Length: 216
Image (cartoon, rainbow, N blue to C red; front, side, top):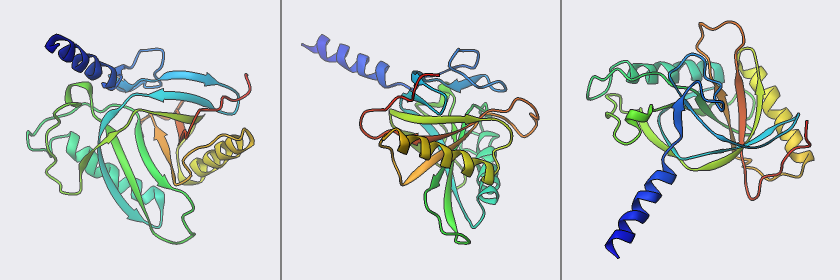
């Protein structure tokens, strides 16, 4: 009986561990980092794709602003400081990809909103990351989830990201898909130093059974 319990615990631990792997894996858009958040592709069409992500731990902070791009810069600086040594261990932590920002839907024009930015923790720090020195930096556990995804190139400035999130919503509504309408994610894979062949995404979390798009 004890052996069965141990086997179950080990199996559960294995199946719920984040898939953070080598950036050369086929399910990776990461070209500048050693490790990337990997996924299982459920289906893909011209307008969007559906992916499954396993649970993962992230380091997170928030910034409030009327302007999303300004909030992103403020939050990015705090998280960058954390991975470059502003933590209780003084550890230098490798940058991973993607970087995600959680964006509330329906923010009134010229009103402040809170934007939540997260860096993916590398595989070596998924279980026991060093505590941040900064009180506004904390850890989040993103659950196992399925997401609707739309990819785009160029720079992920506010106006461009808004366009693609609206395009994705229109495609999902047309497909009669159900998804989380409280917020979406804007997802970036590249550093500011990369000028060409950039990759960005917008995600909406699937609710219920995923609806696949028409085949390409």
